[in-house]
Length: 230
Image 1 (cartoon, rainbow, N blue to C red):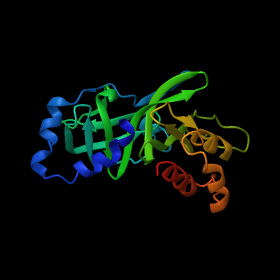
Image 2: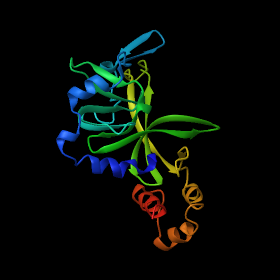
Image 3: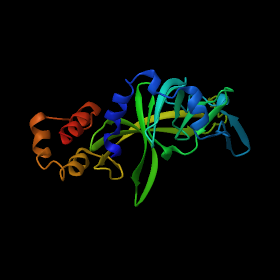
Image 4: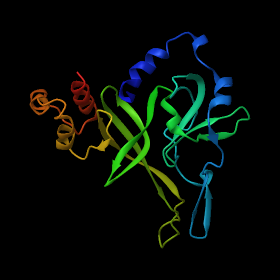
């Protein structure tokens, strides 16, 4: 069911404003918590986000956003942003305090600005974890992007080298595919993507060859998963 939510959600977003609870409503209904990590410790040193070079966010500014809850309530005009480092979606309350979503499983979909996010299970070795994904293709099969960030601690001065402050480094995102609602699996190579989708689309390997797709490219992966949904 969740795999069909994006198209349904986009349709709902065009309903009249009267059908959409606004910021005042989400203030009452949304679960949030304070105490967001805004500082890090390394050894005897303590750093705030302001001390760290780079940003832990996908986008620094809060974007006017929409949220679809599990009971299909739609909240509009919600200021959201995605913290890659903590893997949390943040919002601001009426007092201007920054909060994070306490229970993401209460919500089906987050439209952060123009980008859609879902909190989904994914395979992590032999375990199944959960996290936020940017949804690139919706349908029975999902193409998902998981953003990554690395925290690099400060480096002391060395001969002929100045000290380096701590920093956040944005890394190449990982691509995942979820088939028929199963936990998403990371696409480590082109063969992996085809093998995941072949049970639901047996001719897909031949189609990839005919179309001369390069599955290292995001736009070609998008074509692949869209085709699997046809």
